[in-house]
Length: 127
Image (cartoon, rainbow, N blue to C red; front, side, top):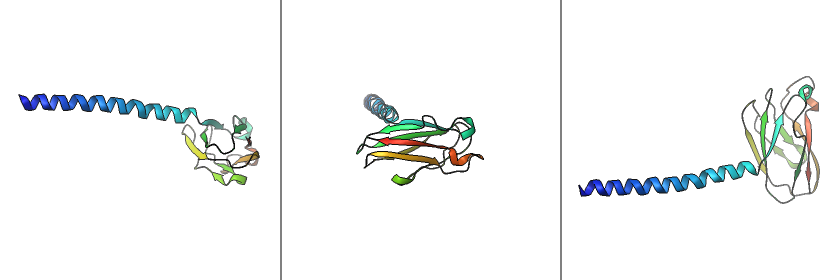
C-alpha cells in the first residue's frame, strides 16, 4: 500500500507542476502574439496588404505576423534585408527583426500573385 501512496503523491506533484508550467508557456505564447503586428496580404485587385503602413520603433525587436487571404505571397523589405518564408492562405508566417535606423521602408510581395503583382506593397515607418 505504501508504494501506491508514493506513486499517487508523485503523480499529484507532476500534475500540479505540469499545470503551472503549462500556464506560463501558454501566457508566453499569447504575449508573443500580442507583440506582433498582423499583416493580411491580398492581391492588388482585392485591396492590397492590410494594414499597408506599419509603425515600428528603432532598436526594438519587431514581429510581423503574416497571412494571406487569397493566394501565396512573400514579404521582402529590401533596404533592411528582411525576407519571409512563403505566406500561404489561412496559415501564419512570423518574421522577427530589429530595425536599426529610423526612416520609411517599402515592403513588397516576392511571389507573383496576380497580373498586378508589382503593386502589392506597403511601408514600414521606423521612429
